[in-house]
Image (cartoon, one colour):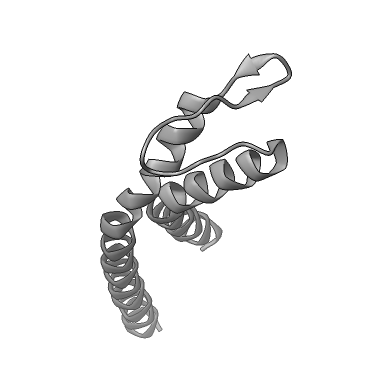
Length: 102
């Protein structure tokens, strides 16, 4: 039973992480740029010097990846729905097996 809980919990965590990762990256890039006082938008990459290193290009790519969340969130919602269906079928199947054994 514990093994099933770990399997279902870790698979849900992976689904949610993959669904929200583009949004997390975009928000993180925005927070880093704001903290460093840098300009950040979709139009272009701007220099953003943090600790003597220019992170402008990387922050711009991370920020633009936020658009990927328009695809990843609906797919993540569909994956969570499929996960719930599999979980429900598994729970029902386990109860049927237990009743047959007794």
